[in-house]
Image 1 (tube, rainbow, N blue to C red):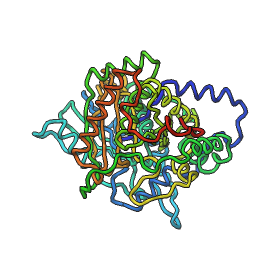
Image 2: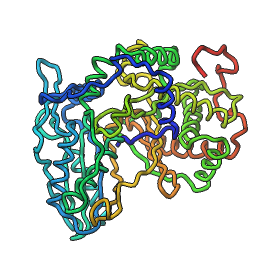
Image 3: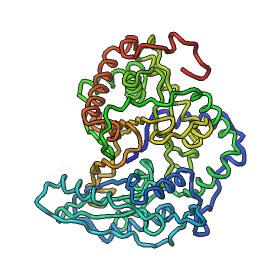
Image 4: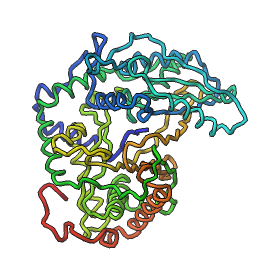
Length: 492
């Protein structure tokens, strides 16, 4: 699943400073209201793209996402059903379907009060609980959504024992992203507690809905100064970018789908990352992402690399508590100078990420169009690799929040169709551990290649953190680079 990217701890501060620096805002840079008042809702650009991809492959489950919550204690199933329906009432996007009219998609809203079905699945068996959870989750995720006819949120309840249940929430990406799932789980906890006889749900007022954002993005955004600056930024920084940054394929396996590896980075490596973070006033994202770019340059044979980084895509602070599909992909480009130290490179990466976040309102597809990047069969434009680091969140396991339940999140594995040639997701867990998930396109990379990528990244990260002041030259490929070619405007 896609998670809420926390690329920099000071993102909110930058947003505040930007707002203070521009007191005069164009009228088109204000969110509309009531965009879902007539039972229909505009579709955002991201939603339109997902709808189109689903029409090409109606049976695909690539954009099914799942979160599992394990509840220990006396679960009130009636209260849980009430809470799920209240959640959909609160967030209109969870009650939408997408129908085609004359070939064009339109979002239609189901009436408030439409129940969210909570269906029991499986039951106590002989298999270990963790294995049973994964088996049932895979079965539920393998069922495609009919975007026009059925709810785009499914709730399934697995009973392991009288006081041990697992709630599986399966969504289509059209209605949710990683940040939104956190909002939904927070709201669900409060709504369940209220329905089960606990305190009244004290949730933020929502002055805007997802439809307001979609209308602004598709009709008003292009008239804003922010849009103009965003186009200029991405055209400048990505002009002449390499068409491919992914490692070359190692085998024509003929296998379809993704191949995922899950691993923990060694304790000494995690400690070394933290040491560099503190010593050089960096973030864990800057350190781990810079190491990823160094590894990527070595694996691909070029110091000039582009990697995708997800951003929240929420162009207004009023949208921070709204559920929907906001996430955007930023194609970040770096020319890695072999004379830089690792610490220097991490500072440059941090600056590039900050610049990208200042212009992340431009949807990825618009960036591709603005650059005139040709679409090639079998190749993703601009960014074939993706990286993110997220911090573990407390799902709300305290008994007070879930009215007598202890609730923990169950990580759900998924090896469906990959969205990138290569994707590395790191989780900064609550105990300080860095947990990784590396997913590759099985049609391009063999199992041995995936193992090698994982091991090589871990080695590069550890080595760079051991000597953060040493030049990068030992890690980068030889050839034309910033040290032997003129520097281009807008590139670092």
